[in-house]
Length: 271
Image (spheres, one colour):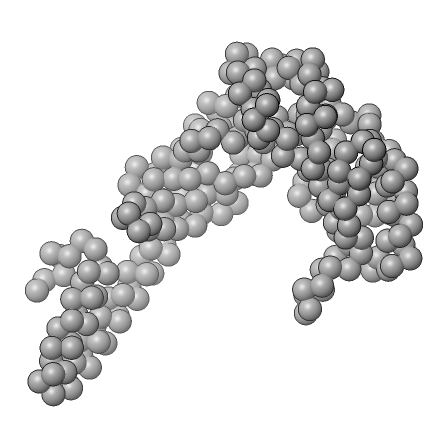
């Protein structure tokens, strides 16, 4: 049966195995071995072709990503593709690929988008890109409150692993933008303006309400050799500096051999 008939290589590979089992029943081991080898080669080639998906389609995907972020009022020249993975096949037969992007302009953020491997178009049905933009602008609106902590951690040479050098906000991460109490409102504010000013105005006018909803803030930083004594000292300082909220604090480094986190690894509640 010719390979061209089989658009799905998995079906063809299964066909070879099925034929092989029939031959095995007839004790024709030589033909069986040949079929298995051929099937393995074909399978390997198909996997290699799928592995080349990102390289073959990178230019088109990059252009589609640029068009996508531009629709959300961002500068397409300030978006970078970090990685393209897939495509992945779901049990339903549908396929998708994932593209990880980094917006290096203002506001800075990193996220993933889903893509259709046939059209190479990217999409994100829940519009989480608006949430990413909102979260960073919201933290910037609270900069004066967060500045003492940012300056203190910077004085200890702790690095923010999730943002580049030079960003206004460091260490703090939030996901308050997905809160159902404000999610629809912030999307509406975002879409009403020609730029980000309408969204900034919404944040400014509702900063107290948003801050009350922001009850799960992460503080992330990297520094090697934070011992228990220094970790306790940092904890005490943070207790005195941080505004009211709950904080998941991860400051230090991870031992590559053991996977153990060394440093300050704790939850803080500031009331």
